[in-house]
Image (cartoon, rainbow, N blue to C red; front, side, top):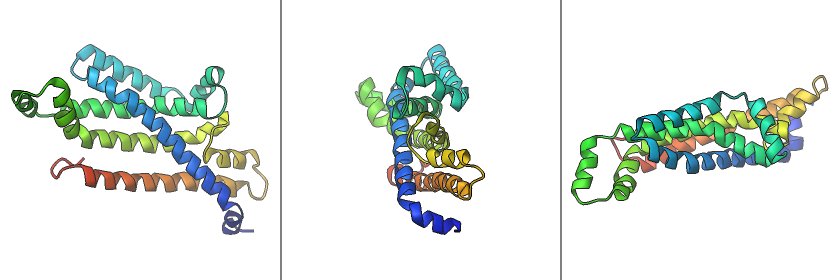
Length: 215
């Protein structure tokens, strides 16, 4: 039996794992945005708090994946809980860094013009600063997504969902006739998701970024 015949026999399992992998990544990314963007907005103007936030987010990214997933088992158990939390922590640096960079690189004259028109701080942020910083923020989301797609495979080690289970099954059955097929299915699924997500971000960038502001 060749690889394509093997895939034909279990393609539904591969599809389910691919969907679960994508959803896991989106959950982690979504939580990182909900946490990272407000923190960035609160600290991007101040030196020490901004440096501290970036340092903490950078430190989290340096923790080895297996170690972080393992540490989260004690408070969160096995399954989706530690998987989502770990991915959220890993996504914080690109989200926070790009949000801060995008906001700090804005032309001060544009912001001052908005204030001169009588806009309050919150309105300036919502209608001027964040929209202008959007291309840089979107790039951060793009980087975070690609990063999480690979790390999410480690979630299988804590009984998390996704394509990592196919890879882990392949490695666990090394030496059997179809072990390599399972590993290839998992790896190929992640590569396919990376391509699809990247295309989606390109479309979103084109549709939401005014001409002249594209990242």
